[in-house]
Image 1 (tube, helix red, strand yellow):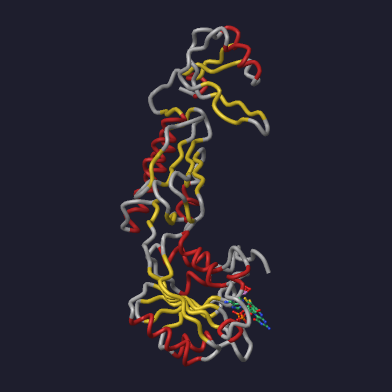
Image 2 (tube, rainbow, N blue to C red):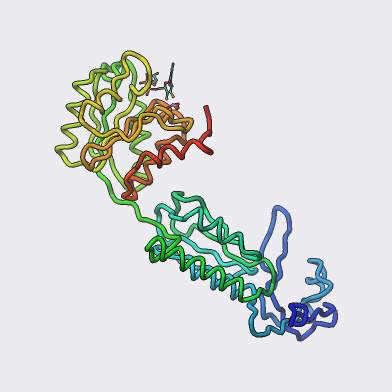
Length: 338
Ligand SMILES: Nc1nc2c(c(=O)[nH]1)N[C@H]1C(S)=C(S)[C@@H](COP(=O)(O)OP(=O)(O)OC[C@H]3O[C@@H](n4cnc5c(N)ncnc54)[C@H](O)[C@@H]3O)O[C@H]1N2
Ligand code: MOO
């Protein structure tokens, strides 16, 4: 039994009353791309000119045999194997099933596994990148098979790979979305020029907004001159107040007045990394004082819309601990702007 035996090609003009074997797509550049006819549609006389307009002089009538799957069924099975917490699958359209997020959160997807399953011929799984921030209802995965009819072997191979991965990693789910915690954040703004009122603070409002966007809040902002002891005292007082995260702005670079990295070290915090291989944001420091994350934020965070801070902050808000390797892998693909 070949695929050809299961697909009967019929001239569109002779197809009145017959049943479509798959969704049919219309594309009008700049105006429309979507399903014009749904799989299972019974072709009417009025449909003939519309079908000819989208270039269909012939259509397929389907006679599916054992051991094979229709593209819609295959896409559903793939999506069902992949999805985990806080996501849901859409109905198939044009042979594709989307997995959408149910919440505002952080996408978790394993790149190695996705690269492996896509080595199976006829399988196509397209995902967002790991650790992307998503809104509720945003698609995070699209699954489909390439032919209209696919051998069940391909799906069995896919299922085996996924199950093995779950066993190896001791995981219930593959692609899922982590919710953000509502964190209370202490903000320390350094810089003599701001402390003395020579210039207005422009850093605070930007950091506060980034936290609000992730469902957290700055509970207090304290200002400090370029003085190590004062910065350390502010760190301790926020720690005593049990904030979930301490952020320190400015003073992260190489000038004699740049005291922030030294102050973070002097507080006794464990420094995960001073320096982040991403531009902008290369002077960021990541540290932990006990369980409390501390980040030293360089001036570019105030200026550039997307820096290393925007990569790491959502992960911290999702409850993840940042390790050295999380930082070192940021260099590849990490040149945004410099
Ligand atoms: N020779 C080198 N120069 C620079 C390096 C380097 O490695 N070698 N790194 C560069 C990078 S990367 C960054 S980012 C910047 C800024 O680093 P800092 O965090 O030390 O920033 P500051 O020196 O404290 O301030 C820079 C600039 O921003 C103004 N500022 C700071 N805080 C505020 C605030 N709260 N409100 C308004 N304006 C603020 C400050 O007045 C300065 O004009 O260094 C590069 N240079
Ligand atoms: O910390 Mo700086 O941006 O690399 O601009």
